[in-house]
Length: 598
Ligand SMILES: Cc1cc2nc3c(=O)[nH]c(=O)nc-3n(C[C@H](O)[C@H](O)[C@H](O)COP(=O)(O)OP(=O)(O)OC[C@H]3O[C@@H](n4cnc5c(N)ncnc54)[C@H](O)[C@@H]3O)c2cc1C
Image (cartoon, rainbow, N blue to C red; front, side, top):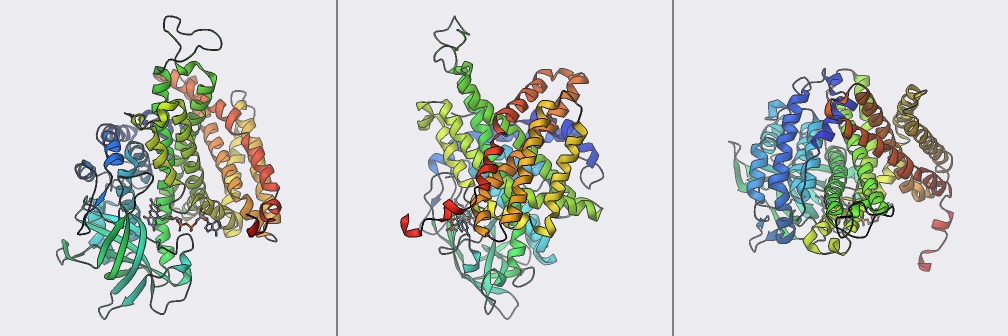
């Protein structure tokens, strides 16, 4: 049976020693979030995840969700009570504005808690994560009335949220969307159509479900320019705000699927369901992007979350399982064999996962901080720069953290040998659950295209130039530091690879877009490695500084940081050279064969 321990100490190292949260004290909500307060909050969240959600993870996988004859969907045993506890603890709305019942805490805290929730029980965490995304979309684009009716209920967890984009014939290409909206005499709309694969579309965890639905108003232009966003509740709110009459929304089926069995993936039928327009007509995709960007970051966090819990269990197993002797002679001569952890190849595997996890967590915390700056800073230029960073890094975090998260789950399973393939170990669930994160919320190939095709060139390349400048300025600051050489020298080389790749794309892609398409995934992963390498430099610098200042009992952990960072620089970062070479090979051999030769 897998276990989980929330990495609160590692998060506190990032918040206090690396990113110095106190420097952000001028942002609303940050002054109340002292290190002591954050430690206490994360400690509580960690306990809930370790003690309540982790045991439910296996149950959720085994029992799954069930649709009954009358269309009701029930979640696995224990999910209802756990969701009530999650809602009562204020975890869903911890970063939501106080005026809507939230606690106004930094958004960064929500992302950190999402990692803990995702490690403990990814399928369960999605009910809360989608609700947070729907809250963000309504706060950004909803009318005052919509905000007043829906947001406080969702912040409190009495109602949950969903996102409805996908249709049977329309996944990536949302321009094909057919769901129809017809204006009624009272100004509301009747929504008709079928959506598929809707996560948390129907369940028994909340009193009402708030569907955010993309649909086409009668007579709207074809393609994505004719899409509008609607809020369509499962039960129509009564004048007193309580859930009232049933709306024309029903769950037609739930999918049998590879993983996340505890989350209901629903076919949703909208039969003249009453909805109200969110934002302007035909600007629906823009409004939905608020939810999609929040969800993309959240899905990236899922990649890290599964990688972390799979790693923790692989370490326990590697210390416990006795097989063979160390190459340099027995390490435990009194035992019949040494534990797996003595073997260099087992350590290579564990260090690969660990060095990714710690940097990925730093990247999430840093990006979430930028999100807070983008939303809460007074200065417009600061907000713009932070928003640029977020926009640029969102596809990278979604694509790289989920591709690597899945690969790491497989590697952690490998540590168990045949026992990892047997369901009892629980490692197969991590592999199955992690797989979906590479697909939903825009398949990873589409994230790579978003980065290469949109984000690089946006605003004349302002975001990517600022990203390069930030790292170059950081490297210049570290010049002359002997202690930082093992970190900054490899990062400088990797950054050069990324800059060369960016220039190559700028030169070749406009005339031959297939070059961009064929190289986009390599570029995204190259970008990700540079971003993670930058995080390792910041962590190594902070660890070295804190060690020099006395380290107050944390010396072993901080030394481990320095070693883990060196491993990343020596073993993972050199991949950027191969990625650059692949990108520069262009699209010729990829595109040459005619379709009928496949
Ligand atoms: C468990 C689960 C939960 C989900 N939850 C939700 C949800 O809550 N709400 C919701 O709306 N949807 C949801 N989805 C749908 C999900 O977001 C889509 O499956 C995903 O966006 C891909 O769409 P598709 O499956 O139609 O694949 P397609 O669009 O058919 O794509 C198939 C493959 O082709 C590639 N491809 C497509 N177009 C291009 C292109 N132009 N260039 C290069 N490559 C391309 C893609 O990268 C992909 O690998 C969920 C799906 C699953 C399985």
